[in-house]
Length: 210
Image (cartoon, rainbow, N blue to C red; front, side, top):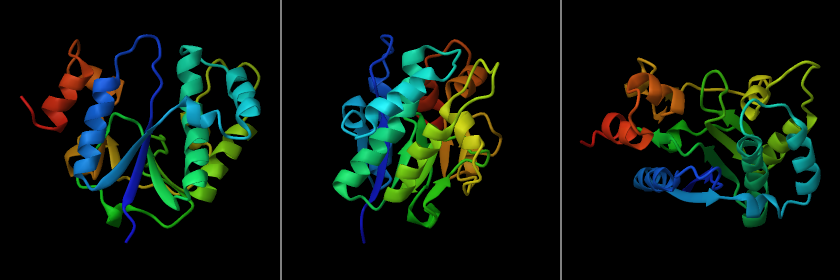
């Protein structure tokens, strides 16, 4: 039986020191039995549609730093390229602040694309090779309405009808302890413990480390 595979994506942006969090992500998913790959812009750049994809996502409106928003889109292009080149039939793409709490093979789906968050926040997304290609095509097709000041890959996913599960929940959701994975988003960590470093909130609440 093929080993379970999970990706995350990292670019060193705006001097944000996220590498310790990426290392913690890799540690915990490896313990859960997954082979972990942290993808980067260099892989997206190898995709034959990189230039046209970059031009499109760079044109989309955002209230966030532009390089951050572009990186959020680029992870899907990197995933599509890597899966195609490595002939990986099925894998997960995860934010690096998503941690397993029992997520295993039984939680994997069978559709080309499965979003493992019930409102289709793309913090933990499962895809086949074709599914990963479909995600990039979906993003390329999105043109926000005139006057829209902010758009993101989250908005794009929420506009789809792709299958969704509740296997991954936000850390500040009362049901998170019963979920197969938890998303320790910036907002959730801030609401739970204002002023505390995100990685320390995760270590204390999610991993039970003092």
